[in-house]
Image (cartoon, rainbow, N blue to C red; front, side, top):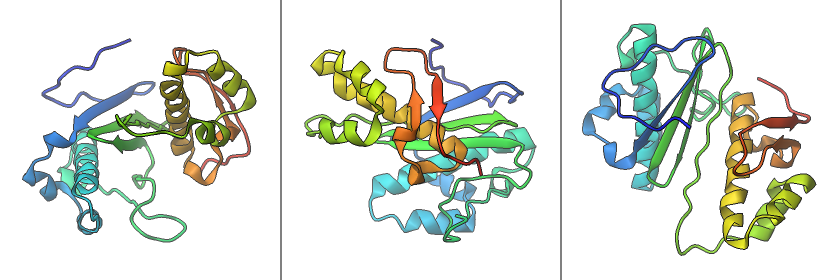
Length: 210
């Protein structure tokens, strides 16, 4: 597995590659506001919790910095459209007018991930395991896993099952974010490889790519 590395310039994105960037909430800088569009800025200021606001701002700033390098234009001029097709509010899957570059943003806790591809849909997800929080793993299994996946999970040591469930969850949500369906589609309609296995999409039922 390739290790994370600190970069000082944005590499060019080619076909058949996926670049994933990781940032933390502690990376936030006041000048990030200058990179946002008016709609993004307005949406950022609507968050009540500071951590949620910072997560969103860093996700936007990182997206614009990388896309600007690929498109050879200033970050604040990148024509990102976040309009939700259902309610017309600026919280939909971000996209460019020509759909040649695709990216996906996820954040949890102090971590922000952004993945980029060319001419191919992409989805990314991250989940922060919060210490001292009681997770209802039974309910999670019933709402997330298929029967085969639940059997595979039951073969793991008990202390590994929460991490196993979240491995399934992040893989499934990444797929659904790539298709544009999100949680409008049940995670149980997505079958993926299990924890500690190479990530593989095994089956995808009754979803549409939009």
